[in-house]
Image (cartoon, rainbow, N blue to C red; front, top):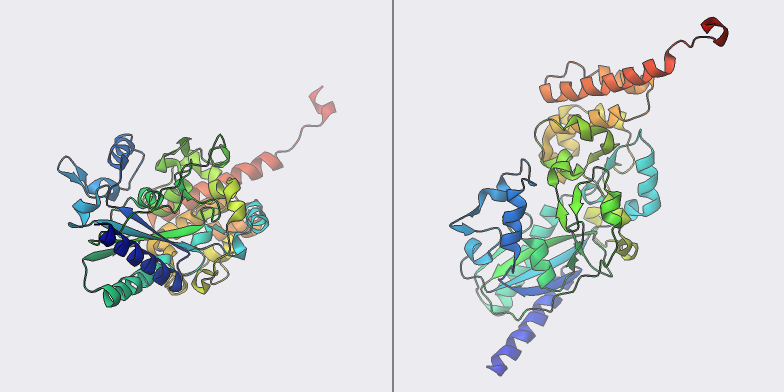
Length: 375
């Protein structure tokens, strides 16, 4: 038995090296066990924190919980290979991000989405790793995941030694921060697990304090309904008015909790060219993006994660950001140009933005009564 265990230890290290050679920044291994994740997921869903993300609850029932139980999702799974791939670029440097967020005429897009769609990059590499394993080890039952099915990836990554769950619910690592993507290979191979990493957040609450919409309602607990990433990406309907002003110029995702995290001071830059910004998305004005036609959106967002929200939600998000921009003729002209947009969703948010600027204009142009006139 010990000899067989040592043999699988050797195989595991071979797989790790193959993964690193393919461009992954870390490779970890865990058993097909998600611990207390099923109970945590059930409580999160019961609180309604998933909002319109019905797919989060679609595989959870009294009969089973595919999202939380690997063997329910892929029968025969014995071990899970989790990979990590850094995405931080120079556009993610703190001073660059802060300057963009302060310039309310500039669009802010979450740093992970500035380049090529990570799903495509990660999936191709994971399949390449699985192919190498098949070539070297023989046929084995496996399935590759990159946000493509109900997988508790943070829980599995933590158990595989790739980090710990931060208070903002993202995976954290002392040397890599949280600016990375995760992917998994479920396998029927009896690969020995790596040692999990313990929590190193301590008493820090920087991520909780920094959230613009107070979506992190408690340590390790996120109310997605208030999260800007959810509002700009997952939400298909109208953005609640009471949250719109707090969104600022963030039009796709939000990085504030990561920017505030002390561990991200050590996050390395990516070596992957596909994650570099495309179409100057890291420094483009709101007005310029709002002027894109549907055809331009489809063409420029081809191969981007942003494309999946569609043109109407893209304009919805931009309209909110323009409503938060400084009041001037150019902003108002851009908004009035879409006042009669074919999409009711867009028209609603444009009307809100125009009304915001009208109120600001009126408040700053009301004729003042001279002091001696009031006598």
